[in-house]
Amino acid sequence: MKPDGIYRSEKSGLNEEFVYNGEGTGLNFFPKLLFPGGSDLLAAGFPPSIAEHVGKCRFYRINVTSHEATYLAESELFGDFHVEWAEPGKTVLFSRAVNGLTNIWKLSLQDRSLTQITFGTGPDFSPMPDPAGKGIYYVNGKSSGFLTAYHVQSKESTDIVSEDATQPAISPDGKRVMYLRLPAPQRNELWVADVDGRNKLKLATGGFLNTGTWAPDNFHIGFFEKGTGAGDKTYIVGADGSGLRQLPGPRSVNSMAWSADQKSVYMTGEEKAGYVPTVWRVNTDGSNPPEKLVDDCGAVTDIDPAGQYLLTLGDLTGIHEVSISDRKCIRLLPEKVTNNVTLARDGKSFLYAVASHGEVTIYRQPWKNGKTIGVPQVALKVPFAFPFDSGGNAYDFSRDLSTVVYVRPSGQADLYLLSQK
Image (cartoon, rainbow, N blue to C red; front, top):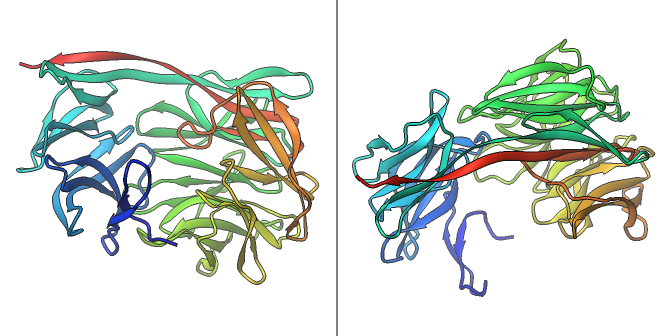
């Protein structure tokens, strides 16, 4: 397997060539812009525990031939991490949030000075200089939307939340859902509600939160607070807000699953920047340090009732399982066709969704004792499409396929030209 990092290739995708991987820097690197002449690359280095939509960024100039990186400047980026040249090779434009307001800023790569470009209430993002030199185009807009439950038997839909929300996770019995409400930039709220929208309760507030999973008792839940440098924090709490406590875990966490007896949780995360994701076992009472199970086997999504296998999902490598007893990674389906996989209620198959042609199909793959049986079968066709990602995972379905909860994003955005003075 080739190492993580920045690569370049011909337009055909052939003759791939290594450029830079940043090993030992404590940062993950992403290409942004080419310097005039094309022999150097402007790259952004982020800490591995970067929070959703915000992060401290270090800009580097990387020579694509010598693979040497030179530090240029540091700043916070916000939103889509979009970067554009203001003056090619000298200054860059991007979104930056200060005191809750997101505007366009300009950073000099020479003297590292920051200059604010727009001054409205925002959020302003996606800057682009006018090719004729008339000024700077940028987008101003706010997102909104709904979190909706589709009831399969009645074919009716109910709005759980009529505001910007995402990352739904349905309880094992299919009766409740946790989700994130997004009331303002850099502010998230963790809520639980019945799947019909009743009995809403706010459990936590933070800068950048991620929902985790429900425990088998349909009461306890896990969630994460994403860090901007100090690392992520993992919490468990009761659905009534009681018993909040932090668990030990790796520096960067992206998924979790509870054991059947709820004495432990399994997490996927990284110890250091640039390291492959690792599956860990953590005791929920906080005793003993996290125990490493297996490296590079995708993100944990579920565990079988007998506690022998974990289901995992790789970014590019498909659906896997981890045999807990011998700590082996086993590939089940070779290609990534989804972004979530869960065991059916009877534990005899696993379910995953695929979007195509204006609808979403949920497939059932028969499974027993760690082995797939036959080929995937169509379990449910949802007669409409919905996003798979919107500020994180944008849907979930109950284990009995009676309910699908999904995000309906909306909003308004306007394009502006800031005239050059």
